[in-house]
Length: 266
Ligand code: ADP
Ligand code: MG
Image (cartoon, rainbow, N blue to C red; front, side, top):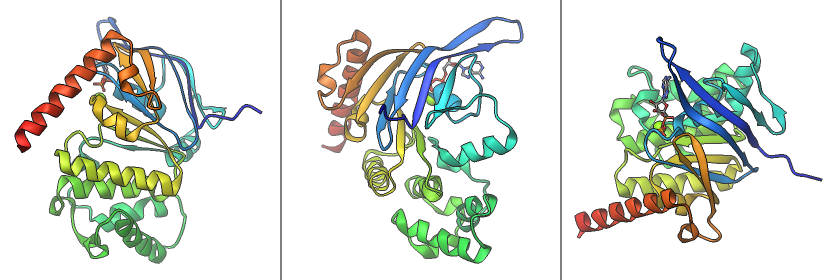
């Protein structure tokens, strides 16, 4: 029997139209599949359509053409209720964790919200779960009463990841989730993501402009250029096997950045 993909994107295109009627093709005929527990990297230069793909898959916007299926069930236009259920199954982690919070919200409030919104448990139990989540991502349960501005960027991204994992989603989309962090913190967050993925079994879409990162995190990498998927590289064979000139250009950029970081640290 053919196994069902956690996520299937079938021939998806997205056209944005300006007020003057001019059209911009942000994604062109994109098809991909993410298997259960798999981590698929999406790489490409700025403007290649990575975040548009993330917004389509997470149902924040609708495709102009094509379909998106979660666990084999096509998700077209959905009712408010169905959309809410979908948001529970497909979580997103963005680049800047500070944007995710309203400044006056405590971490406790933020971490309790999914349990209360989806009526999973009582307030008392949600409070306990908020503390457990903080410890799960390597923070102190006592930090639960802090506000976002009392955390570093790396610590706050841990909190965001804790909430993303809270209700056991099927898929988490990380859109440049480590790009704003310095290299050491980036490594710690990647270790955290990999540990949680192993423990919780969610599938990942790991979006980044930094090809070097995908070698550590991903099973497979798909390369986007001007809205089209141009190459797929399996990490079993490694990035050095990439053939498309655009992928090779991205590799050179990644190598140059690595050298620069090494120089800075030397
Ligand atoms: P990436 O995440 O790879 O940097 P994006 O998916 O954010 O790229 O954007 C791809 C292209 O689509 C960009 O040229 C961007 O300006 C354009 N775009 C994204 N969202 C919109 C929108 N709502 N309206 C018009 N153009 C958009
Ligand atoms: Mg983006």
